[in-house]
Image (cartoon, rainbow, N blue to C red; front, top):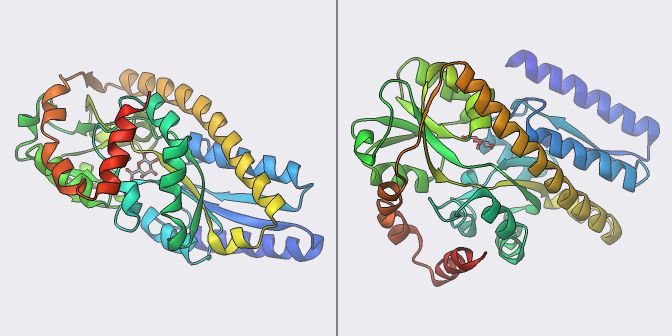
Length: 325
Ligand code: GTR
């Protein structure tokens, strides 16, 4: 880790020196927890290419993948304070800060990833984006994070009753803790980078995620039972620090916004291919995928909605999402 940090520091210094040399180019630093080649990493690189082209090289993006700049909760603080300019993270870790983000983080609120894409790239997504601004960031666009299901090291989950006595890792948000509790299990929130060893050493019995994360983080090696209950479809969010955004001219802001939207189209394509490839890979490696009846999982979520959807504004958002085609 120390080595990585030193490496990142050296790269940053080199980047800073090249700014002075070329003097006209601003290098924007972006963080991602995923490895190089992952659809979100590639989408942000594509965004970088587009803005470089469309501003005649005045702006350039460097993507620090593989959590080189830290775990998501830390990088959220970095982008809010302007230490880094860009960040691609899940919506989940924003739940404590931006109340509107709780809505697209609710279990079974979206019918499918396609439903989520339409909602988030439309008016509702724009409304949710407004909630970020008072916290120091501007939402550039949303990406697809697929649907998340439970995976376990010992016993597979076929019905909610199977969660009894199980400890499962969730992202750092109270909604997900309550979601697991409503199903009868115990949730342990922890950073993504700690999940592999937590499963391996038996600190938790499993976790939950989409196929690409289950694959690329290696979790399939230590938790072979994947139960396709698809309880969450949490969007990914690509944000810019407000400090950096405010330095752009209105023309450049429009270029950035359009490039971000174009990068979503690219990410959706890459995402679909990655889901299929990751699923095939983990199956070939011996993961057993079962498809439980989702209805008992859906029915168990009522207490989560009763607890989190009390504000009329959030109630209205939930109703509009459910009504959206
Ligand atoms: C992934 C998501 C990451 C991170 C991770 C997690 O699906 O892309 O941003 O939130 O899940 O479970 O922490």
